[in-house]
Length: 199
Ligand SMILES: C[S@@+](CC[C@H](N)C(=O)[O-])C[C@H]1O[C@@H](n2cnc3c(N)ncnc32)[C@H](O)[C@@H]1O
Image 1: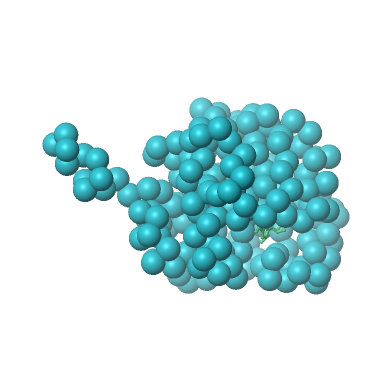
Image 2: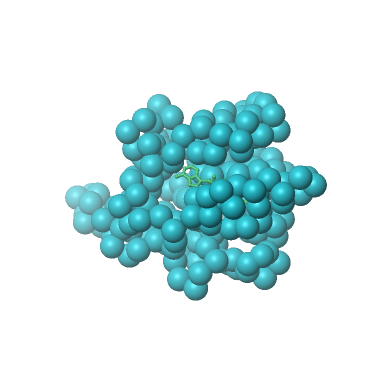
């Protein structure tokens, strides 16, 4: 992690603790877990709340092209830092909840989404708007990867049900402060919506 990142993060947390949700950037161990199912063939990748960019760096190490990255960050200082650090990526300074009204892709073209947003501190209504916007951009079969410091999935079951999504725990790490768990969120392939007509 670049030397000043911990300090910038702490400063942002003192100004907006609920928006940050953490006092320190994610570790390499958590970044590796968040990105391990993503690779050079994934194509365009959407990242929400990149902060100082630990998951962004891990995505590049996994072989994702910098020009395939779209980073959505609401903090202007982090957005400026990311623009300097990842000049070939597309950095959009906005609230991720805006994705459902102002899509940043032309249809469902994204191969994977990675999120550092503190969903445990975000209302179910706003979480639902963010998920709706993200899944409108994801290709069929593509997933969103989300970590949490809590014991349970950070998304309410009612929100997942309404959007026909399921969350599966794919791993956890103690080599992060605090220890974290990662979930893969994907669409439920429901017999009732498609397959039954062709079964
Ligand atoms: C817990 S930090 C995670 C930062 C980085 N991904 C990491 O793991 O170190 C949350 C990040 O999400 C950003 N953020 C919070 N709410 C947001 C929102 N509604 N839209 C876009 N970015 C948001 C914060 O500014 C911060 O950079």
